[in-house]
Length: 239
Image (cartoon, rainbow, N blue to C red; front, side, top):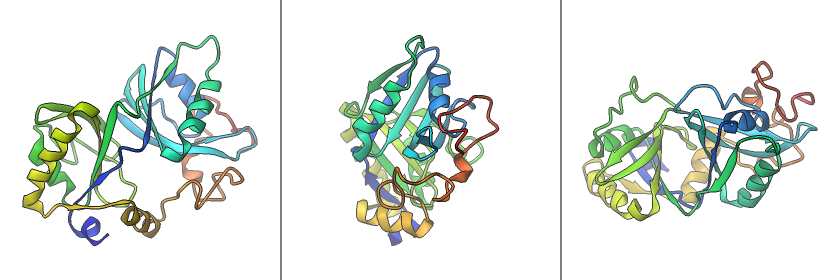
């Protein structure tokens, strides 16, 4: 916990569920399911709830717009099949949108803490400056012989990055991060640390702080509900 607040940590989050949603209508479909505006800016990660028609929470997750027709949806492992089923059942029959479970295809390593930018910059040629790589930005970067999607996101309240790495290259990237991390006193951290960090920051956890009996406003997620976005969304009338 202290290393995350004062220095830099590495956390294996490969258990997270990952889905690629692709097709001409992928953005429109995800925007209809999501309360937040997930189909706006390219190379942007957006945190959003999914709701039932009555406005109560069905899931909360992130949607990354990688191309106009390719989106990465990341949700906690405990909601894997639930989120996948909800997504698929809400794709209209005449929509050109397809869901692929990529959970086992990508490892996920999170680098978090005040020195996380320095560590990532030490292993990639991509410009990681705040101007070139702002909060919520995502793009494919090179680390060693590998390429990984790197998103500037945090679930613990510090500067940090989420790396989605092809599974066959994950150990190579991990080794590169650990080797470069020696110069920054890199510390490994686990889910108990994540739990205390996210609670200290006030980030919500589905199943602990909220569930399918709550609406987003009751649990402090009203900021994710974009009632003025161009498209309609499930649960909008109730919200």
